[in-house]
Image (cartoon, rainbow, N blue to C red; front, side, top):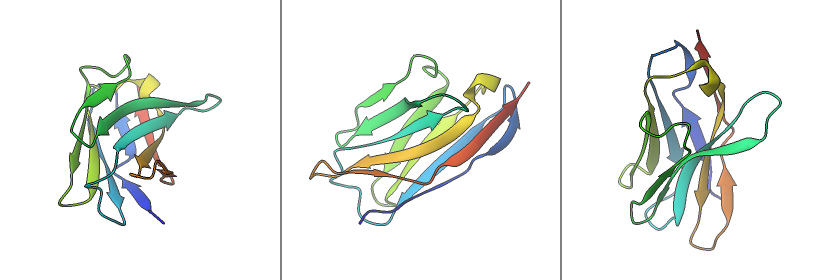
Length: 116
């Protein structure tokens, strides 16, 4: 069973930055993809950014140019650097991983709150 533990959430003013981390309990080297999703109050969980095993990235249009996803296979960790944060970025952010067996795993989530 893969466990994903997020950290780095918190409260920040608009224009500020946060870096989220997602530490996996096992090697992520062979994971098909890892990513970040978010869920705002009353809304569905939406994709924020993903990164594949080969390093290809994909971003939601709303975060392009502001957020950067990266992975450190040696540390079994994926990061989300969030710059120029906006109040509409306020949400619970969830880490996701897809194993080579195409099993999906989710973290418990970390709250990000951006005040105007």
